[in-house]
Length: 219
Ligand code: Z5A
Image (cartoon, rainbow, N blue to C red):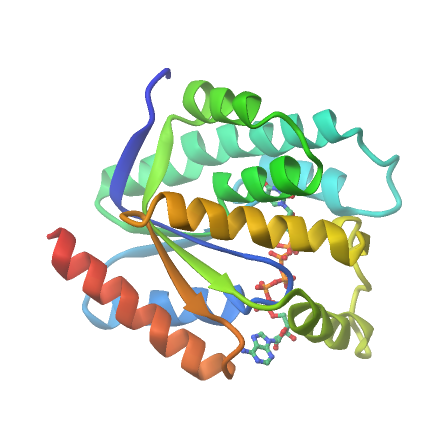
């Protein structure tokens, strides 16, 4: 694969910690299924058995911390598998695919957060992934507000505690957020930015409205 192809039935959700992607993922799936449309919900890193194993290597704080470059390449190794085994087959069957995170996360976290070369990320995207969502919904929320939400979840009884990346400092997540916002501003035809500081139901309603508007406009 050497070119980047956009697919109109491929939608990604992006955002920082506690943006509320999980609720939105379910709301988008339910809205499409109510119209009789086949939908595959998936996530990154992950989405296939092998990619989920890579996810565990990446996020479990018990493992040796990967170098930034190792982290980037493992994200792309998982993504290469995810695209070939889950996303492309679903799109070929005619289903919609909604992914909780995709390549924009690598630009935001490994590019913005870790400071890795954006040219390298773009090269990996073009040569290893070759696919881009037709629509990307960016759930944008203030870093402190988002982290407060995940802290509540992680520290609740039965919570798993913060994963390795969640343990980063606020400055890291400020760079992640700034990178997302810059990417959204640079690609307004693909991105829709949703104010994720609202209550969860309002965020989900806004996301469903954006998906419908985009689909009806793209059809
Ligand atoms: N990562 C990367 O670095 N590079 C890459 O290329 C890729 C990923 C693909 C994935 O772990 C980590 O991998 C992630 C990026 C990195 N880093 N971190 N940290 P993950 O999937 O486990 O983490 P996440 O995607 O960030 O999940 P999250 O923190 O849970 O965010 P979320 O899915 O958007 O939030 P949520 O689960 O829907 O909600 C979190 C809590 O907030 C929960 O208790 C909700 O009830 C509450 N919540 C959600 N929305 C609201 C609203 N609107 N009001 C009040 N409370 C809310």
